[in-house]
Image (tube, rainbow over all chains, first blue to last red; front, side, top):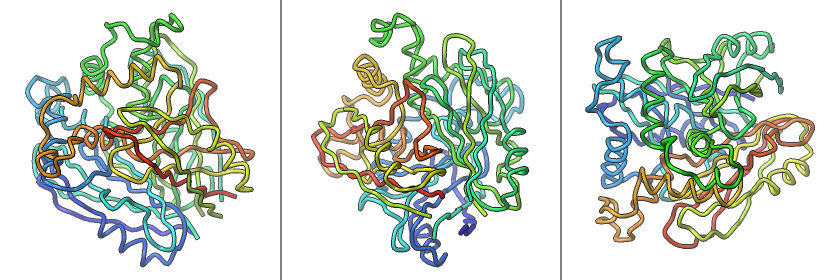
Length: 138
Length: 138
Length: 138
């Protein structure tokens, strides 16, 4: 059986993180499925999904990491095309990836206590985002 | 229900990107499945799969990113073993990952307008590649 | 049909890699499923899962890569909070990702000859780890 849900949320951009674990838990619970997997997929090319221990220090550390490896500063070829100055956002999003698959059992996602599912918005401005939750199970 | 397809394609290597969105759309459509997920998995240890806004500027930016974080230049221990000089290709492929899972609904993959699914070949020479599309749905 | 298995293993930490391909092959075989996907998900926020050509040279190269992009040295904000000095471990684990999905056919995972599935433990000490194998297929 397949159950599809869509989460809508507003972000601030600039590598901001949104903890979507509560919505994930609630959507799996109300799907009626007991065991299976849930695929989270963010629509768009400047955001990504992963897990992290969600606390402000690590959010800052993660932002510093991306600023080190794919800095906002230097010119990107993408920016010359569209002039929207978010080439670095695209590179980061493609490197981290738009998709995460989480198992669930007994109607509940299996996660560590200190492991939250987050949307990371790498764009250079606030955005409205849509995440598809595709649940496959029984 | 499970439907398996395999894509064969030729790449140039050196971080070249192949847009496989058209094949993905057509294979999901002809699977007969309406709702579910499709797992794309590239066989081999020097290529990876992700999404990106597929345009030449970003392809160049993405290549620069990998040259910055896992440069081709310095000696890699892997190269000492096999003498094939593609240690950097392996590191990049393992960091980006061989696998991507995309939801579909109404027989069509759910993607952003500017979000294409690409194979990135990090190897240091042209290759023949095989990507497994494993569709699970109903 | 969904089949859930859990792997328990001990790691050394410090970016050590454990080849879990043999366990993956054996668990898929004894699930009784012929065709489908298996999602590997590591519980916890300082470890990750990917594929690599599993040999000592590349294990060393992969460690060097992470030391370059997310070095152990500098202070992390996370460390100020918990004083456990593993902020870099969290950043690396979130960048690589806790999850991998592999297709299987004829009761056997589809992988390249030189492509092994590995757990990478980024923590700064030995750990006991649990990986959930969620198989969905028929």
